Length: 318
Image 1 (cartoon, rainbow, N blue to C red):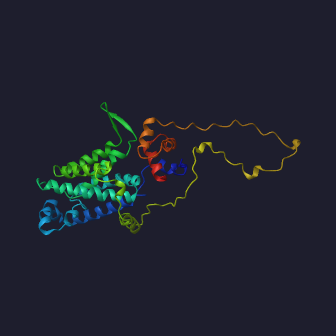
Image 2 (image 1 turned 180 degrees about the vertical axis):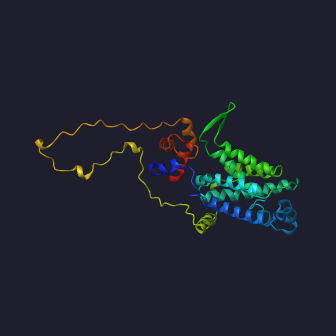
Image 3 (image 1 turned 30 degrees about the vertical axis):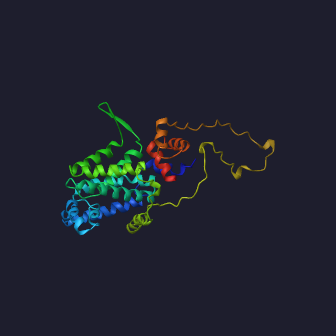
């Protein structure tokens, strides 16, 4: 079992922390945010609408043009909600790793774009500008992979803490309806195909390290440290509470004469607080992330049976 005590205090204050171990997400947000600000300051975004680009796609063979529509929003509200959702989905990169996360973005974006082009051959619709394909593909993986941490009841209906992210996605989709429905459905289909390995195994989709280093280069330019600590390998501990501390060197003294020794006062040893026993439901939720049952139980005990905190602890030490 991985020793997680060193990180517990930091995660106790903030289970979700910045862009640490998420360089690709940072690079994506910086690119989309910068281009959105540029096109909002200079109102030329109407020239890049997807339906106009598609009309020029076949005659001019300008295959690069449809992709330019994926890197900026055409309104402030779209950009605000879109960048917030991208930031909220950064935990998916921590689960996948930056290389696998980059492959996921490229694969789902390309497949979603092909599906979208196929739909536009027989149905014309106003496709909004923005990385809708990326956001809803990430939202699909968020719904499948990220476990809930808290539940509450409203008017007799039970919800989890993930409902807030889902409401943001619905609001983001509503801004550009009905044109945003098609990219949303195409992104969901592409994400399911990737997750279920319907076309090919996701392990075979590998990209060069350029996509990972791009985010690191942007972060270093902005002075952001994505990985502030150099972590060293630690000894594997099954249960830290069972470790017996070594006797200090001062205790190894020459024994005194019987008449010179005074009987020390007897102290009743204090029992440590019992560890919180995690529930089977929480163990199953953490184990679904790809960790063993022993790791899940130990992390939940360290995190006081908090699924999100335990998951972040395991991801940080993986």
